[in-house]
Length: 171
Image 1 (tube, one colour):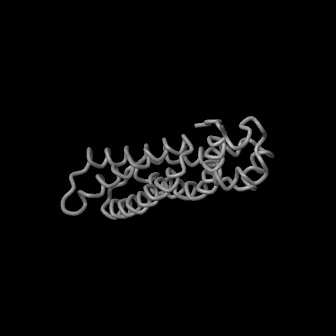
Image 2: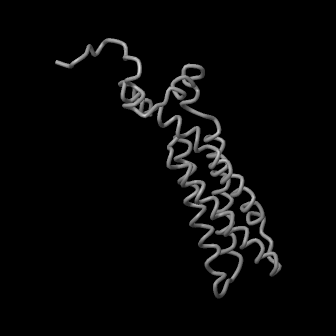
Image 3: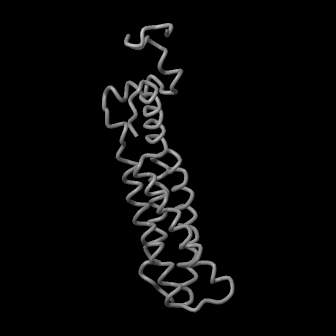
């Protein structure tokens, strides 16, 4: 037999320390239940999805159109690898997973650096590809949006954990 009545309303101050949800999180949920599904991470996921499409097409286009020698061979493969990892991050961001914001920030940030350097090298040697032009800027925007979505995703994760502790599994 439990120590307290399971059907009684929760006592003041007992839920927050157990589940990790702060009073501010619960107050924000009371004011606006949409804090469980914030819009900024979905926007970041859409930007990361666009970035991954641009990166995958840029890498494939470069491998298909240009014969590379030496260290230049690594650039399209790196762009493809980080484009694929930003695709995984975008899908997880759509699902509101907290780790996805950090993964997307890392993958799109490195993608912005690699694709930006590739764009400079390619233009310096007379090769301009449409997808390669869009990839660095979209990756930088995706990295910024992913960084901005860390806070809202953390709040949503704490609330999800709180409500799961109360028997409401919200995803």
